[in-house]
Length: 495
Image 1 (spheres, rainbow, N blue to C red):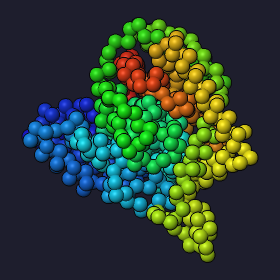
Image 2 (cartoon, rainbow, N blue to C red):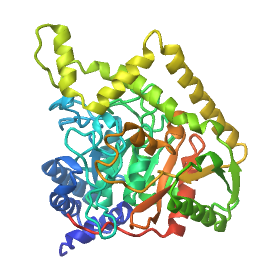
Image 3 (cartoon, rainbow, N blue to C red):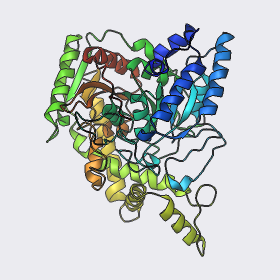
Image 4 (cartoon, rainbow, N blue to C red):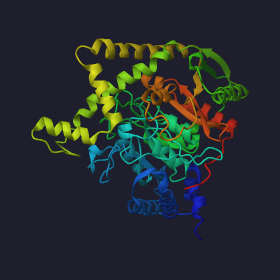
């Protein structure tokens, strides 16, 4: 059997690669080697901050042996990228912050353990905004990721979105068959929209948070970024499941999500929330939304206008709740047990110097906001009020479900913007999450599907929001949108 051309191997979907492995068209070692070479050639993107080629080839060889013995798992031999927020046993994990230094975990996160259980191969660790705090992957201690996409006739470097910018860029540039990501306020879906990839944030509690570096524990949820809706379904099935080590993990069976892709969506009622028509939204995004509505109508759906009246309070509530939880979660980074330790004359100075050196500006900003809103004089005015708003936002969705089965919205208010464009304006950066934070506050599944290009030839995404634990319907609608949109464009290779 002659080795196939390596670029044709990296351009495969996850499903296509698994089928090819099963048919013995190529081996996992060949598939993995092709991805290792692609990663080496794509270093200008800065998507991978740690490459593990030797480990990948060992895992691939073990996979080929399992396949030969007839004991292959659901993901056997598929090379994946892992966001550097997931602890990987024996492999450096930093959350892209200097404060963790060269931290090497002695344990494996549950989500990645599930992937290795099913036979997946680890190519390395992916770049992200520091501690997952950011919408452009510019707060990383390893420098920003560059989006593989470029505007028409332009060589301006664009953001891949954040915080899972490395995951999205790596999938878009065919450096891995899929990637793990996390979403606290849109960090899976917004990068997916900016890179022409598919990303799903499942229901809160569907994937274990154990071994994932914490940002805001009541909002964080792991999920995949993939090339197609079906690939995302295959990955989410492997990543999900009950974990007694995570008290918020749901003890419920995991459906075969891929079985929902391709199902008829005739008769479903799709809600269009009127509050998502924000001032100054680009006409191209309005048009994309209208296209999405038309495609779902053609597929036999009924379109219903719904109201989510508390949407305008979602961002302010999110930027109180998330930093409050972050300030509590990040208190453990004190230079005592692991990671960076700066010198100081006494214990207080060691704490202060370690944090001043180790944390980046955005992380410091959020810790300060969080400490402020939790402080004695302001707790009721800010934090408690934000929790009440959060409850109202969840109730808005509960009311909407009386009228519809799922919601359709844009994923992000713009296409990818230039690196450095919003980095000096935190508010402009935070506004990127305007369509995505509501589902984190309510714990609902939501997914971004690439559905079109803007006038510069950059990808735009549509978001589907589902009822809690109803990822199946979300996948069915996403599959129909993917088919109607026929989005097949790839970023032109410049790296």
